[in-house]
Amino acid sequence: MSPRVLVSDALSQAALAIFKIRGVEVDFQPNLGKDKDKLAAIIGGYDGLAIRSATKVTPQLLELATNLKVIGRAGIGVDNVNLPAATARGVIVMNTPFGNSITTAEHAIAMMFALARQIPAADMSTQAGKWEKNRFLGMEITGKVIGLIGCGNIGSIVAERAIGLRMHVIAYDPFLSPERAAQLGIEKVDLDNLLALADFVSLHTPLTPQTKNILSAENIAKTKSGVHIINCARGGLIDEKALRSALDSGRVAGAALDVFATEPATENPLFGHPNVVCTPHLGASTKEAQENVALQIAEQMSDFLTRGAITNAVNFPSITAEEAPKLKPFIALAERLGSFAGQLAASNINKVSIIYEGALVDLKTKALTAAAIAGVLRPALSDINVVSAPSVASERGVVIDETIRAAEGDYESLITLIVQTKDEKFFIAGTVFHDGKPRVVSINGIKTDAEFSSTMIYALNEDKPGLVGRFASLLGDAGINIATLALGRDHQGGSAISLIAVDDSIPDRVLAGIRMLPEVRQASMLEF
Ligand SMILES: NC(=O)C1=CN([C@@H]2O[C@H](COP(=O)(O)OP(=O)(O)OC[C@H]3O[C@@H](n4cnc5c(N)ncnc54)[C@H](O)[C@@H]3O)[C@@H](O)[C@H]2O)C=CC1
Ligand SMILES: O=C(O)C(=O)COP(=O)(O)O
Image: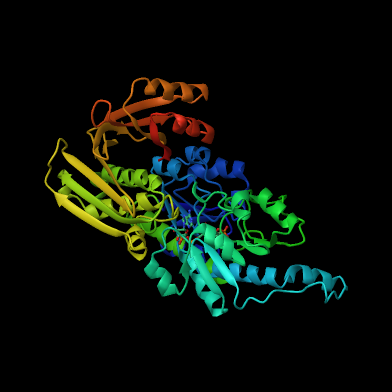
């Protein structure tokens, strides 16, 4: 029987022919993503789901998707897909990381002009017969400073276009190497400098815990007076209420928004302000970009469903059918070790070393390395995939170093990851036991034994009596259940680590409480 794919968002119909030619049955229901009950009622019958941003792939939907093998995102952001749930169910999630980048960058530039010359308001006034020539005094773009928060694929294209407009381009992006900045002809700055200098601030990062509300009230207050803000990335990057106040006070002269904290945005604190320009998430909506992403996702999904080939998966490496079962548990281990280190590293990772020991010497360690690097970088580049991870790392000046050697320690197989930033080195090692579950067995030389769980607290603390009890009561008082607890220390009374797996997400105030304990030197919440 041919595999069946459901298209639940408005993909270009160019995709349909590709699916059919490649032997995949396709059901095109472009509005279904907006009706979650109808989607839930039929998802069980499909092997593949092709989407844009309207369909929300929740853990509940995945529960019902009993035949689903692949989700194809015709576009870049996969934040509408619950990745841990898809991964846990073995569903491959693929995207098309480049197909709509130019179009989205062009939209950001269009938004900049709309603000600088107040085109939407001038249009409305003119068509209302007012001819208000003196009301609309614009701003010349030439010579102005544009500050890019995030300078990956789309940010880089915006930079090139802005240079063409004779603007001065500055960027804040912890993963932008000085070489890449020089190649683009832009200046790498820190966030405070960017906010102080930019006439236009344009956002181009994924939405991650680090970038959420990156334009907070506090950061908006650091902007140059009269700044214009453009967001064609993700809604949650801006504190919308704070932006409204700054527009009301006149500190922010204008804001152009393509994306909103809640979408579809039918009401929003920014609506109705005279200096706000809005579009309904149109960044990727050109005929050219939609054809690119639809054709590409149809090819990738068909190749996977009919031949098992994996391309641009954000949650699995490219490997053949024979290699898969042997590699799978070690891929999960490498990715989680990477993610552990990546979530802890603040920024500026410049080297990742990976040591494979024991039975791993016979496996395809490149796939493991790719998984580890994807794990390290994903907290900053949410849409990175295991295929692109090594090249993205090298583009960003991150040195990757792989060593394969015979077993030297207690374990049949061991992966050690060393993540180096300008200021420090972080060591983490793990193995897979016969139960197939990945485990952490040492951190910075301190031995432990912990399984990964979806939410964990990692604490570095002094080895003193009573601390475990204090952790337990802080969490217990907040109604958070401890699932498992693993400890380790270098010597009695010395440095110790605690790995606490919990059943729920940890509110900031609880984490702050843990950090305030006198014995705790560092505490972070990690998600896997
Ligand atoms: N409005 C729309 O229709 C569209 C929106 N997008 C969104 O645009 C965004 C950017 O996409 P791409 O450029 O393709 O992604 P990318 O992954 O190529 O680049 C993202 C950049 O953000 C940087 N970054 C990550 N964390 C950061 C932080 N804390 N501070 C500063 N920089 C940080 C990364 O280092 C990276 O260079 C994504 O959120 C994507 O979903 C993409 C296409 C269409
Ligand atoms: O590709 C992306 O990340 C986008 O945000 C585009 O979203 P869309 O496909 O237009 O719903």
